[in-house]
Amino acid sequence: MRCHLKKIFLLAAGLLILTRVYIYMRRAESGNLKGSLTWIWDKETWVEDLKGHYLHFNISIKVLAGVFQPSKKYLTVGLSSVKREKGSYLQDTLQSIFSASSEEELDQMVVVVLLSDFDVSWIQQTLEKITDEFHMRLSKGQLLVIHANEDNYPPLTGLKRNFNDASDRVSFRSKQNVDYSYLLHFSSNLSQYYIMLEDDVSCSKNFLTSIREHVGSVGNSKWVTLEFSKLGYIGKLYQSRDLPILARFLYNFYQEMPCDFLLSHFHRLLMQEKVIRFRPSLFQHMGTYSSFRGTFNRLKDEDFVEEVADNPPADISTNIETYQTNTVDKAYSQGLEYFWGVSPIGTENYILVVFHEPVLISRAQIVTGLDGKDELVYADVELGKTLVKKEAEVECSGFDKLGSLQQGQFNEAAVQKLVPATVACLRIRVTAAQTTWVVVRKIQVWTVKADQIT
Image 1 (cartoon, one colour):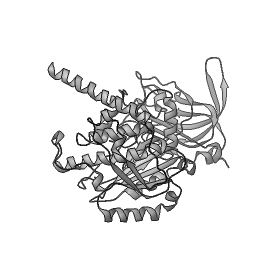
Image 2: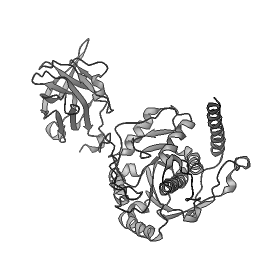
Image 3: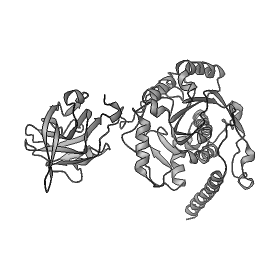
Image 4: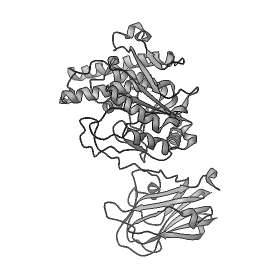
């Protein structure tokens, strides 16, 4: 009972302290560059009654390359990079960020790279590589490279060995927390939103547009963290107004636990009880070797897709009997759930996707089966041009065949060449009977945007 009361007391105390800092940070002005290439936090910015509870910032961050933009952007992409024993992925990560984004998206984005290693020669070599390859992005203010000197860091040795971690691992993850703390605070006044990445990830095409759509779907609901990857702290989105307090949170508890653990506590302390994660994932871990000891790392996010489907608004129906709650709309939702249909399945069966507005399709993909079972073996994929509305239902007609499923899969990347006009619906029509049940995991549609039509 005493132990239980103690935990409640500690949690309440933590919430009280965080709330007071949160209120203070709302009142305080955000960081101001004032035309300087050094970003400074002075410990005197802390109100007096909080100083007894918190470690104090008194550091400067140097801007090594890039120019500041006069106005805030929509999104800051932040990542920290250190010297690795094996492999180097920073250049590939930056290339993925920029190549996955349109010029219009890049105008609403700034990428901030913290070179957080203490090896001066590595920093110089890395900086030269970045300036050589990404000089245009630096000159446009779309990329900033920063660094904090070693003497700005708190003690990184002789720390608590929580979770029975080896001392070198404790030092590594504790420094990582401080790295991200500095990166977050530096980025707090650059944009409306901030997303956390690592220096060894690849990005889904047009990820900023996908993020904007998902943020819009949340509406006025209160949130602290939105997740666009299930891996560690990759793809975690924050509102920039929360970055100063998150930076201090990571700094104050830097030696207690790894960053991803602290981040999960942070959103709960600010009263977001549940994880809000969107699928498919927009970011994938691509590194083979860890930045800690150079150990082999197999980590992958199986929910990642390189190009997220548009899946325009539509009504999805089928005359295949549904098993329990595995309804057909789940195959179109791009989530983890799927449609599961009961046998027998015959030539009279179909799945119909009726678009709310006519669309010009560039690509279509159908994925069926699960663990090598329950594939839809015989079916054609067709596009219909005309809708006929009846009292109880909508019928589609004027079908053109795109192709047939092969081993339960269909992927046509040149739909526009085969059917160059707008269509009203997509139909998966069974062409031969099968006795097994069927799983349809994905129905994905990519469309041609108005500005892409020539």
